[in-house]
Amino acid sequence: MTKRLAIVLTEGYADWECGLLMATARHECGAQTVVLTPGGKDVTSLGGVSIRSAGKAEDAAPADYDVLVLCGGTIWQSDDVPDLSAPVGRFIAAGKPVAGICDATLALGRLGLLDTRAHTGNYASQLRDVVPTYRGSALYRDQPQAVSDQGVITASGAAPVSFAREVLEAIGLGSAELSDYLGLYGDEHRKVGG
Image 1 (tube, rainbow, N blue to C red):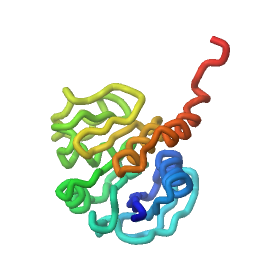
Image 2: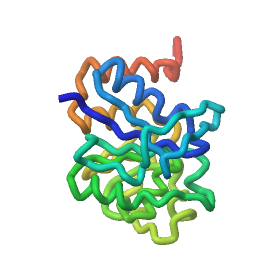
Image 3: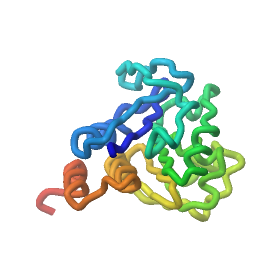
Image 4: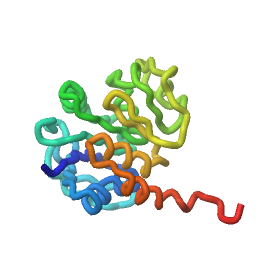
């Protein structure tokens, strides 16, 4: 059966954070990616890319998707933070993974999901500074790669490659070949001749 990824994009979403995941899922893995947005409204990225929504993020159901992915962007630290507690709660209760990258990790922190799970984010103090109820500092992993623990995947905005790998592995699409393919996107960071 074809795997389906619910990708939540918001107004001002960060183009690069879920782009590789979406393209790899569709092109390399034969999965289906469905873009959902708060209220089902069309959105525009930080880079000016306009996206037509396929439905309301608030209605995302684990019966319809294998994973719920929250993309980062400017909205997560604004006064317009969408309330996605219902769909996130449904996925967690159903034992299906939930993933957040960059500032979308703040949404997971606000819901208490990072208080009992290993996780990462943009930087160590961001969750403490932005989410007053956050109690997971001891479980924060200060590392450049994505972290997956107990069905929750987190990453900094600078880690779209390992984020893609962790999400795809969580829904059974991981393989050595896929890891090698995604690894190519990190090669530019290797120092040549040194």
